[in-house]
Amino acid sequence: MEILNQIDLLQMRLVTSWHQEEPKLTVEGLLGLVEHQHLQNYLLWHEEDKARDPEADDHEIARVKRSIDQLNQKRNDLIEQLDEAILEELRLEGVTQADDAPLNSETPGSIIDRSSIMALKIYHMKEQTRRHDVDREHIEQAVRKVKVLQSQREDLLNCLIQLVNDVRDGIRQFRLYRQYKMYNDPSLNPRIYQSGKTQE
Image 1 (cartoon, rainbow, N blue to C red):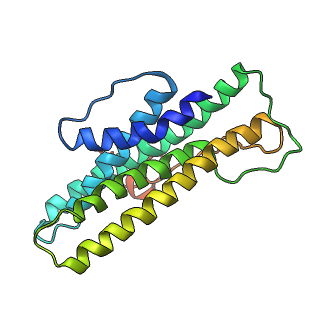
Image 2: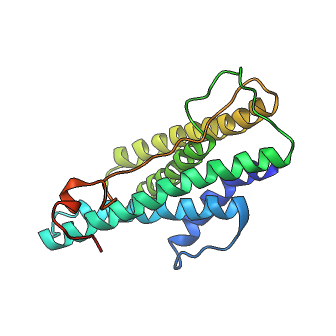
């Protein structure tokens, strides 16, 4: 699955371009799902910043909280879709997961999600290295943190490729896990269904 090797550059490239121009989706297929899921994390990151603005009033905080909930729901839905797509790609390759192989607790989709978040951390930590309103110690700490984050993300992406290769080789398996998030579901969240109102 050569596409797994493209995730690293795709996520890093998009983080940079989306900070320079309006984010938009550009590819389809499995890589398109990676891009779409990455976009949810990008939007979430900046909504989370707004939620912590000390000058934000209660109305803005409530609006941001609802936006974060909706983005989180899309993010989790796309993690599941990534796992479904990867399972389908493996099936098309003729791979059948070995029932007796050890079960990996983390799925490829969740690893891709973590890689996406780390790409955002790296971008924003690099911003800290270019600030002119902080002391030298702040800059040096940020430079060290960038190196650590890059190393951790590289490990993560290698784990993704290793997991898929292990599944191919029949020595590991993963399952599609459903999130069943309840807080956004008007039929499952009692604060919604008992009020008789639905969220916009």
